[in-house]
Length: 75
Image 1 (tube, rainbow, N blue to C red):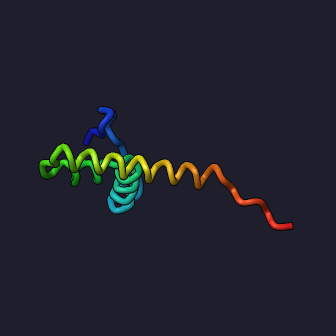
Image 2 (cartoon, rainbow, N blue to C red):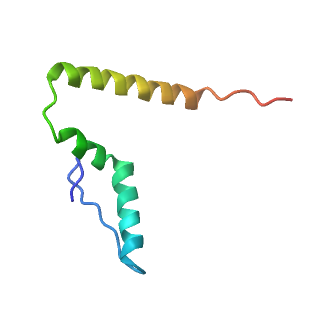
């Protein structure tokens, strides 16, 4: 399966297939492939797409601000 950048996701099977499947699912989740597949399953109206993108952008900004502002350590 290829992600949005066209790079295939590869997992090496060493011990067991179950372990390899778990690693594959983690990689796909981290790269957002599963969310993308779910989102593309049905048509999304342009207005809904715009709203979703602004909501995601706000969420990203909030996360970045939370990471930047580190509370001072108590003395």
